Length: 590
Image 1 (tube, one colour):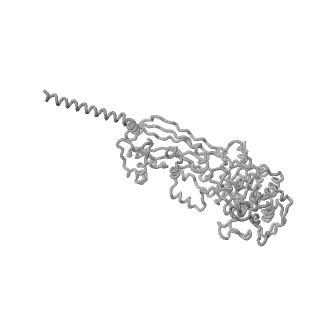
Image 2 (cartoon, rainbow, N blue to C red):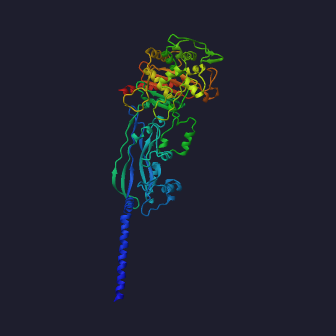
Image 3 (spheres, rainbow, N blue to C red):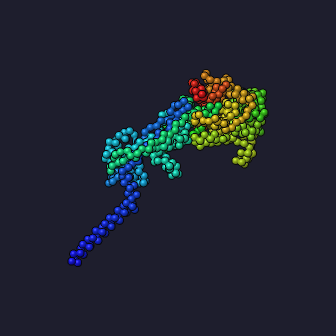
C-alpha cells in the first residue's frame, strides 16, 4: 500500500513544483519585466511618424513671396518587427546607397525611439516612384514626407535671405538643435537663420498601428503641427533684382536704405550662390567648387569686407572742417596737381590740377589737393571724431553675418598699435579716404543716409513694421553745413565737370559722391590697369534721391571696378530709378 502512495506523492510534488515555476515565471514576466515587454509590444504595434510643420513664408515689403515651401521625401526603415529580415544588397541597389553606409545607419540608430531609420533623404519624384513599386519586397521600408524650402529667385538676395539645410555634423557635435526632432530643417544663414525659431514652427505626430510587416493598419492619434510665423522684410524685390543685374557680373556690394528710418531696401553681395543647392544636400563636388571659387561667394561683402573708402570720405572731411570752423564756403586752395611737404610730394588724381578750388568745386571735381590742405587744418583726431559720428568704424549690428568694424585711425590708435607718432602725410592720406582708413559698404550706406536725413544714423532694419526707431547715433549739424554739402553732392551728378555724371537721371534728381580707392600705390593718378584686373582700383559711389526729399540712400562698391564715376555711379542710378520709378516707395510708407 505504501508503495502505491509514493508515486502519487511524487506526482503531487512535481505538479506543485511545476505550478510554482509557472507562477514565478509569470511573476517575472508581468511584474519584474512587465514594463519592458509592454513597451516592446507597443513598439511592435505602434509607429510614430512626424508631421512636418509648414515653415513661415518670407515676403518682401510689397507682399511678394521670396521663398516657397516644398515637399521633401525620405526613405525610412522600420527594423524592430517580429522576425524582421531584409536583403541589404538588394536594398542598396534600390536606394543606390553603398551597403556599408546602409549597415552603418541601421546599427547606429537609437533603438529606444519609435521613429523609423532615415536611410536616404531628398528623394526625387522618380526615386519615390521606383521605391514605392518595390516596397512590398522590403519589410518596414516606407516613404516619409517633410517640408523644405524652394528659393524661386535663385541667387537673388541669397546673402540676405540665407538658406535651409539639415544641421551639420559640426552643429550636432556642439549640441546645437539637440531639442529638435531628427531631420528638422534649420536656417543656416541670413534671415532664415536669424529668425529660425519664429519661422520654423512645431512638427506634429501621427501614431500609426502597424502589422508584423510594418504595414499601416490604422491611425491611433494625431498631434497637429503648428505652422511657423510669416515674416515681411523691408527689402524691395524689384529693386534688389535691378541692383544685381546692374553689376553685370562684376564682384561688389550694395546697400540701399530708406534714410528716414533705416529700412533696408536692397542688399547685394556678388558673386552670390544658389541656396537651392543646400536644400536636398549639396554634393561634395558642388561644395568644393563653391569653396574654391576665386570670387568667394560665401563672403558677405556688405558687412565682412573692409576697403579704403577713397573720395567718398571727403564728405566726412568737409563736414568736420565746416563744423569746426576751420573753413567756410569762401575758403579756396590753388590746386596745381601736387603739394610738397619737406622732401615728400603728394599728388592729386588730376596731374595738371584743378586751379582755384572752393569747397563746392572740390567735392564736385573731387580735388585731392584741396582736402590735403583741409586735413592739415583739421588734424586726424577731429576727422576721426566726425567719421565715428557718421557711422564709420563701428559694426552696424544687423547680425545677418559676422560684421567687420573697418578702421578710423587717430593719433592714439597709431601710438597704441604701431608705437609711433602720427605724421602729417598720414593725415593727407586719411583726409581723402586712403592710408589706414577702411570702411565696409554697410557703413558707407549709413554715412550717406545720415547726410540725406540731416545727421541721424539709423541701424539698417530688416523686418517691416518695426516699432518707432531711435537713431543709433545723431550728429547735430548746422543747417548751413548740411546745405553746402547737399548742394555740392547735387553738383557731383549735375555739373558738367562733376565726377558722377553717369548717375544723372531723367527721372529723379540724384545727389552723390564718387570714390576711387587705390589698390596699388602709384606716384600719380596714372593708369593702374597695366598689371591686370586684380590691380585695378576699387570703385565707390554713394548717393541719395530725390535730392530735395530723400527716400532712398545707396552705397555701391565695385571690386576692381576702376573709377567710381564710370562703374559704380550707373549702378546707383539704376537702383534709384527702379525704386522711385513706380509708386512702391509711397505705398510702403503709407
